[in-house]
Image (cartoon, rainbow, N blue to C red; front, side):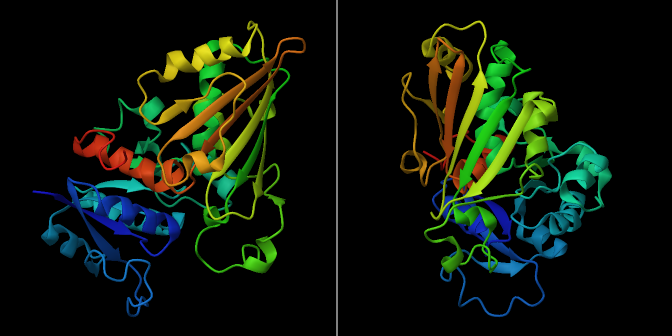
Length: 335
């Protein structure tokens, strides 16, 4: 029989994408969990005729036999709900930033808010399977990575591990995202008239996803310059990453590092040297596509990393984590 899994925050873009993936997953049955007292009727939902909707009540969740719950909610809501769900012996995949950082001090510095569940912050397993796979199956609480850090870490960490980055020269990550990354809630900044025909940078030098890259790729803040930019498309992230390479002689040398690291990874695709991915290549998928270009005369290297922010950057990766936690094939429902 299919296992029941719950989705809180199914009205948002990431939550709706999550439900779409789960509905075609052969081993689970999604249940929508309504946590808002003012939810009203469901006639305007992104999934009006989809899975059943029940209250996000601990006893009802227990009675329904829901094995795992996804929290596609703001951080403060995740901090409220996660302890209740864990107390029921349910396992949780949180798509917010509530549990991605390791200390309350780091969280307060980047999210500008107090963390109300320090014990869970310390316990949570970071859910980037390509680097954390061995810890995910036994975890009670998995913190799904942010979309920008997913694309950045998959591109940067193998290079840091191989020692081919001139760290004194720094790494520059120029990141562009579709509007759905800002969420479904109405905002002047992301309204049609503000976004269409426009291109803007935001959260310069203070983006809350930066510490995830620093932690996962073992970088110091002074070594990493990150700028997020909003482009007038609905979905997708493309990051152009610049650095000075050492101990390499060609793009093929850099590509060999990725080939060695990702040979067994089902969701990382590599391009031939000198070729770069675009957003169309990864739209509506759980893939991260990576391309490398290198100038031997100057040592300049450019890596382009592309994902779907709602796929590998959110819902797809959350299902990848669920598969590992529940003992399914990691690719089930995603290929």
